Length: 457
Image (cartoon, rainbow, N blue to C red):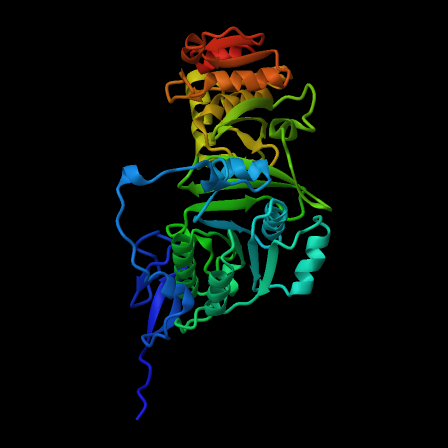
């Protein structure tokens, strides 16, 4: 008499992957509401797949001093913006997750990586579970010429994919996308939390045992109904997010997690007919279209990893038509804007309680660095008093609750970036000014309080 498979029902959090035997309104780990999804899990396992068999090979412990690092351990993707975000190149044997909204350009970017690496005689395998071979061919034609070092495979069965990887042994593999792959040993549907987690586990073992770099593409929906890349962030080596409007021309590639480099690096791309083009000077892109002699517009410099980036802060202050003033922030923290406006009321004497205030970071950037605090204050003060800040002046500095201007890190790099773009003066904290020993052509204006900075207007 055949034994029946033991099937049980569990609940997974779609944000963090927490498993529970019963439904809960709030996840006890990530504190998100209504994120628990019910799934059936079978205790019967299928025979070991080729990918899992690779993990059973015995390995011997080695001393740290016996391990050598050579330059060949990192591969170049042929795209300098991507290499910057990855920490200088693609590390062999790493598992890289590329997430973003559908249609943002993830597959296009990785196809361009395949074109560049295949042109350098590197063997690659592109596995697609969403498109046919002809569809991939039609999309690849507009990106350029591909060599025969790139192989295409349309498959969703993980066992067959693992067998193809072990047979071909490429240097890099692209999985497009992880939500379409399924493991026969898991009874859940493709795209579920358990399927995504188990599939990624098999790919992780393949990457580490065979020394193959694997790129995983993951879709993120606004509703959060699909188990997205957030479940996988603790398993992979690097997490990259593609940001931007699908209908817009510009894209931002941001490193959220990176075991081999900085987690604050960004890459800027422009979507064109022939694919994604690198924006070599993102500061000029962020300041393009800036209005002349307009109040409420201030340029500041933020640091994205090792890169200084000039951004424009816009503020609009108007009399409120209701009893309760409205506050809105786009591209920066809403609570931080309220805090800075409270400092202006208390320390400078600006009565903003009867005015609506809108703050925007132009260019679609999202900046959380405290060095832009003084720029927000100057933009709000400029709009409130209707006095424009000089177009050739930049502002940096952190604002404390007592109204003091605190020092910021990497001041000299920010000053050089402002000088390179043609700014003639920059307002910066007095403590940061004292640490600058190098002579610059740009005029440095040190301030120690918010009142001193506003008086310059």
